[in-house]
Image (cartoon, rainbow, N blue to C red; front, side, top):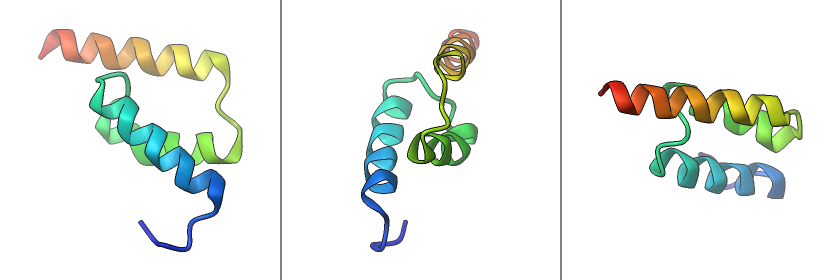
Length: 61
């Protein structure tokens, strides 16, 4: 990512990386979800859905 990230985007990127590493975010959705986190558009329902889907995917692997 660019070094010219806004503070919100930089923080969202760090959060996204940590969550993906913990297996609670699917790699293929990371970019879209990081953008939603940075913009403040990530709702509680979005978090729950993503975590549930990521955990389900990990269990199937």
